[in-house]
Amino acid sequence: MQYKFYNLVFVFLLLTIASCNYFRSDVYNIVKHSYDNGIDTIDFREALGFDWDTMYWFPSNISLEEINSIININMYWQDVGDRIIFVKGNQIVYYKEFFPYHETPLKRICFNPNSKHVIYKEDASFLIEKHGNKLFVLSKIQKI
Image (cartoon, rainbow, N blue to C red; front, side, top):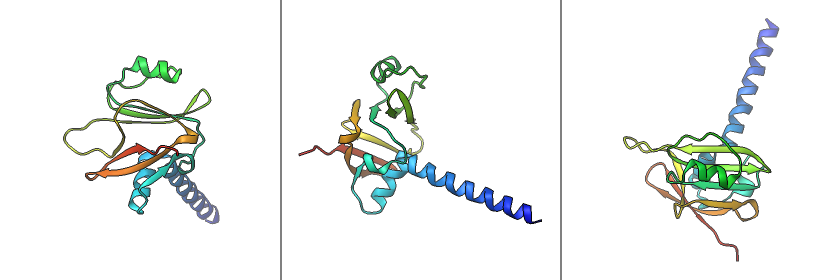
């Protein structure tokens, strides 16, 4: 009986830790959480729960071949939607694809202007604008 209790507590703790790490590494949730707490800027150097050195943003009109040539890492990507990719060295440490759904609004972020971007960690600050219910548009904050 005592072992079942400890096993249950252990599983609960693992699920709690796993859910916290997911939140800290999901870019949409991080941006939404910042905005919902009255913060209209985000600095990805400090906000993410993983280490990275280069961030890439590709809108859906960028070909898969071009993505692979820019990040210099061959990976299979689905051929729809926008994507954000974080790289550390020569490895992808995080990516998320935002698929277009015309029937229901999609929880997503995008970048203004909506063209490809290569952002380095030391220059990763953005202004957050909310559009509608579930869209956050990030605009680069220029260093002075």
